[in-house]
Length: 245
Image 1 (cartoon, one colour):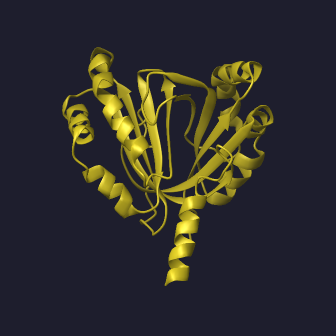
Image 2: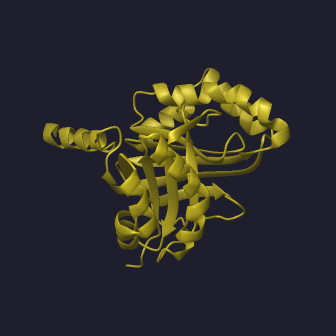
């Protein structure tokens, strides 16, 4: 069986002001070290937002590293023991990494198509990532609609995890969410009301200079976030279903 590209998203939370300032400096300094990481492909350093998805208000406590790897073994090794990840972990008060396999992707990120689609959808948790570069001339129009989208993601009872990250505040934004199964994600996507109207306005308004949409099967994770493993809810749900059956 040929190796399957693995995508990692690592989140780090920093408590003290000094550690947060250190993390901010790494948005520049780590760019020189990351390309030297064995096996790394596409990578991005991101800050985070304070809301449930795209948000104009930064969260200075949370930073992220997204990367692609040739296989899961390399992804596991480097996100646990790689030099950059180890430095972040030494300063962070908490960190969590989720490993993913791409099931669908369309669009580009910084002019590239970074995610290799060679994995069929499978039962269990799946993740969705939306990344966009907002046109400067349309930024005000975009942020007029965005709160309705983020609010609905945050209030959906089925979503297991959600976060908004980004490379450049206001202009380059990413939403990442994890769902227990395809049905719950599809139900959210079909929902009407202000959320659907806001999405339609964004998609039809030509607000983005560049877009990427991707879905992933969740392979595994390590670490904790907000004192727990975000995927534990999905694991417990599957266990309950097996016991009931």
